[in-house]
Image (cartoon, rainbow, N blue to C red; front, side):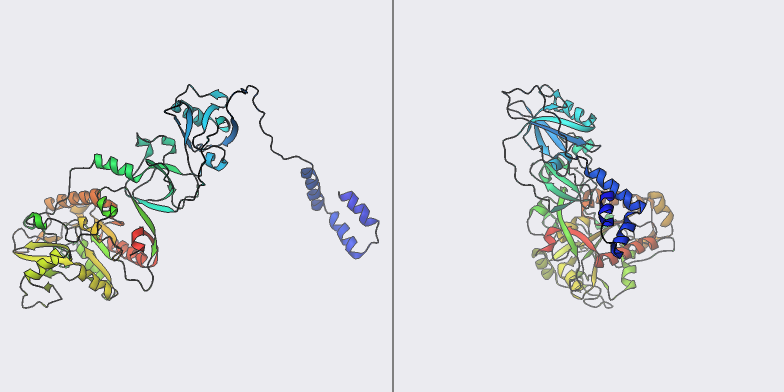
Length: 515
């Protein structure tokens, strides 16, 4: 090409433009570029298809010969033996896998051969082994399904996993290699719910388009229901436990923190032995004690929105009150706590609406019947309780409401109105408790004098046991876990979490986005 072009240019009057072009064409790098262009242009890059097998029976059903290039990734399809015909058929195509991307293999296709090996007499497990051992090009001989498939839609449903899952430990999964492992709290994108037992999903934000199998919500709920633990967390009698005004001091002495505004008291009869705030009946609450998945969506608080309710949960003595006290002191205009209700007489130094909201027993019982209390209890013939209106009062002042309640109450606060963020304050190891709380004290109600006494070994053991039960039974409701090993470190982590909560985007139950 270059010599011909040069000859034609030289035969013309040598203008300044032609001289400049001839000079450019004489440069070695441009000569090399033109030479490569000519070489590439002369080659044929059309695909070369494999030859058709010579042994195809003319009487046989229409077949497809498919060749897929499989690298280290799974093929992305599962197979099964048809119960009626006995044929090996494609059971499912994993979204985003090699088979799905090819568009050549479909659910219901009958598999006859793999790399020339007949599969009619083989078990599905043997065929899967052949596929797993194959690398590079794999040739399939397939009789296409007559079913028409619906067009594939990108999955738009997101769920939060409320349990850990390892497909390698699941005996029921049809193909362990096709399973998707996840941890409690992971956000999954559902790609297909065509199978009532096994959904297809991938981790949210994962660049790999291939989906994996996970147990469906209904299937997992059935499995969990069959093996539900008998152990349930029951409220302890107030005479046998620490007072609601427990201390959470560390080595620096005793912090008598009287900021508790929830009442973890026992119920005396069956009539009151339940949470006093009953949410609307829905699937969300009917299955709340069988944690599987929760449909979620992204939410970010807008400047004009009320702050999300912050719920603190933790065993007695863990330091929850001291952390709450430090938050309140850090910014009294930004953080607030509820004022509890009581039926006991007001003392001389107390003011109505400051220490307590003082109301009559009749009015308290009426409010209980009308589900106006989050939780309540009776102590020395007087009622104490935390009302929904007391939470609303704090939020209405454009403050962050800090509320600590028993963990079983949390699920009833998870509503569109409150959008709670639940933080579990967890104790450190037993050895660390002994070390950090050796000089701290706790207010005990055992002697009815409210005396501050040093922590005992029994207190530490009870704290660890209670924390374990809370986390095992209600851990799926916790948005954040903070280990209170060192008070200053735990407070710093708590403060950082609050700052993020007000500015960043979080996954929340999809029902919270619509009233």
